[in-house]
Image 1 (cartoon, helix red, strand yellow):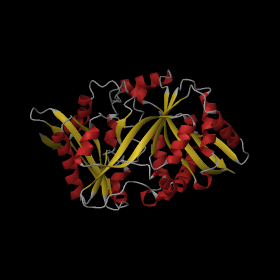
Image 2 (cartoon, helix red, strand yellow; image 1 turned 180 degrees about the horizontal axis):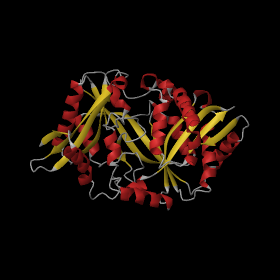
Image 3 (cartoon, rainbow, N blue to C red; image 1 turned 90 degrees about the vertical axis):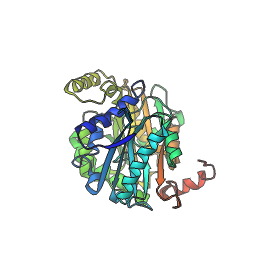
Image 4 (cartoon, rainbow, N blue to C red; image 1 turned 60 degrees about the horizontal axis):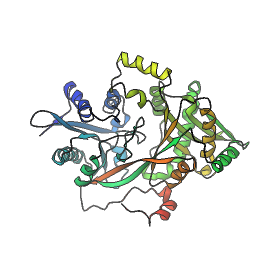
Amino acid sequence: MQIIKVTNKKTRKEFFQVARELYRHDKVWVCPLDSEIESKFDPESNIHLQNGNACRWILINKENKLVGRIAAFYNREKALQENQPTGGIGYFECINDKTAAFLLFDTARTWLQAEGMEAMDGPVNFGENDSNWGLLVSGYTHPGYGMPYNLPYYQTLFEEYGFRLYFRQYSYHLDLRKKFPERFWKIAEWVSHKPDFSFRHFRFRETEKYVQDMVSIYNDAWSGFKEHFTPLDPVDVKESLKKAKPIIDEELIWFAYHNEQPIAFFIMFPDVNQIFKHLNGKLTPLNIIRFLIMKKRKKITRIRALVAGVVPKFQNAGIESAIFWNLNEVMKHKKHYKEVELSWVGDFNPKMRRLYEAVGGTLAKTHYTYRFMFDPSAPYERFMPEVFEDSRKKVISKQTD
């Protein structure tokens, strides 16, 4: 077998082709857009490359057939927030062969070590963790937009190489055709109508305001993660919204205010994978027309919840419940939406898991994020931020790997 570095148009095309070959007969898999993956390796599109680097490879066998691929990357600022400089690997695809998989892992590891890294997380995205993050280990049903899907044997390949569980990620499915639990609904409606609180959905014509509100909420809500926290940049948020405009439904993004001060947000996107499934990863002019027609005909019946944030002062005030109450009002006139994927919530955040269960969500998928220490004698700790320390104490005795 031969490792080949991706350096030109031909190898870039082969990098994408690996997945198409492996999933050729998988009826569930949705081919990600080639352009979205390629943007992660473009310094003009990915800000993480401004203080970092990335490299990718394909693997061919002796018959010159594509049998695998992998990418390695790091952002130096983020890498140095860990106890040891930590990079990432992602976009891993491989035949069911340990020799092939281990060669890919070794190649990524060697490159990261040469770049000064001492550990690697994977499989992860070279960007934020709201998309393409973690390895699917249970729940091999339709992947929501931005949620990774992989072949079942990948878990064995990762773990036999020596990757260790860093954290679990849980996704819940909510059937919008079923009534919400009555007790939850009463609390949610009560909070929603308290005079000091107000709730509004996003509007593109007020993008500037909502971007500032989102940054304010997020940076306050997640600052407790300390070394794992990177503040949001308004410019980046605005650019992301601009790129996502063709798929955004304004009434699926909600903000909460207390005396007109922003205190919470909840972001959901229509699951465009229901359309992308028919495009084979290509946004050709014809496919763009097909996308617009299917979207207009309301072929998207699922929603994916991406991210939420509540400032610490109001994290026990039922704000999340009230946002769901307002969303339910939206669904009354958007009946083509049948299901919500609430993804994802980490095993280190039992409070959010309880909320998803309280609204009637059922556990549907589990992903694992792994870490591999280059020095096997180095101390290893699972991800368990201090912000959830109280919850950790309650569950730690029950937790087993």
